[in-house]
Amino acid sequence: MSDKRNMHRPAQRKKQVSRKELVLFTRIKAVFCMFLFAVAVVVCVKVVQGLTQSNAIATTPQNAGAVDDNAAQQADVPADPPKQTQAPESTPDDSVKETEQTKKNGKDVTEKGYTIETIDGITYVDGVVIANKSYPLPKDYDPGFSEEAQAAFDKLSADAYNDGIYLFICSGYRSYEMQDELYNSYVADWGKKKADTFSARPGYSEHQTGFAMDINDASDSFIGTPEAEWLEKHCTDYGFIIRYKKDKESITGYKYEPWHIRYLGVKLAKKVEKSGLCLEEYFGIDSHYAEDDKKTKD
Ligand SMILES: [Zn+2]
Image (tube, rainbow, N blue to C red; front, side):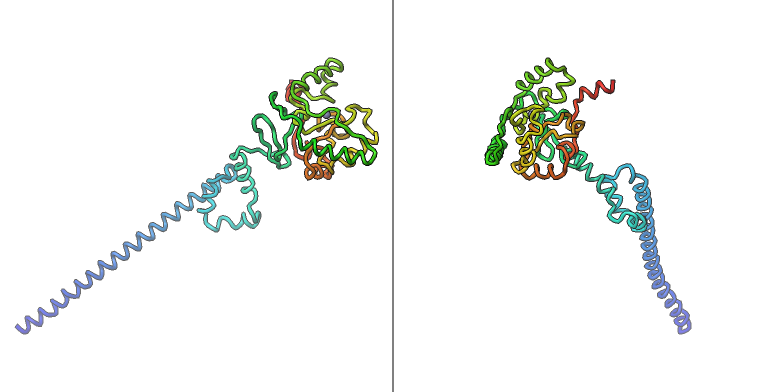
């Protein structure tokens, strides 16, 4: 018995140990499996990231919009440093994004970066109403003469008078119909080509904005007079610019007209004058009839 017991006991012990071992082994196996699973998951994630990153690099030059934003976030650090050393702020991508956003907002910008928008057929550049050969006004746009421009001119003429200079408005606001009549009378007298150099076609006249006016004598005989000199020297102090300057004919589309002034407000008038540019150059816009462009192309 005792022998049997002795023989049995170790056997029982062996059985007990092996069970423990089995449990331990099972646990180790479970842990190992979990570890393998975790490794597999990590490997999968890395592979997916790698694919996304390579896609992002392939698409970046073409579309640098929102998709690339995500790609940039997902892309691992190693891919970026060479780019960053070349372009620290990554400005090209940003500028593309900005341009796309500007278009999305429905606003466009001029060559000089000023906002240009059309509201009810009227063009505004940086909030300033524009009328030239590229940007006409609607036929029914009839704002009348600007009270602000009138008040500014009253001040200007009073100060000029104190200097012994007599200035008066010989032509202020002109409606579409008035311009139509005037332009056609010039065409009848001078022909269309000549008339276009000094008179706007109906709808294209700055006089229709209510912010433009001709002073004293709207003709070449005004050039070089003390009145013209005073006006040119002082008009920006009151918010006006000489709109059609000398040597800017090819840009404004009109010959030199020292009698035609445009109200912009003192701040902008002084900025434009200081720049030495005509209004088209300052804002970065054109002034030529689309109809004439077609003829040139034909
Ligand atoms: Zn005029």
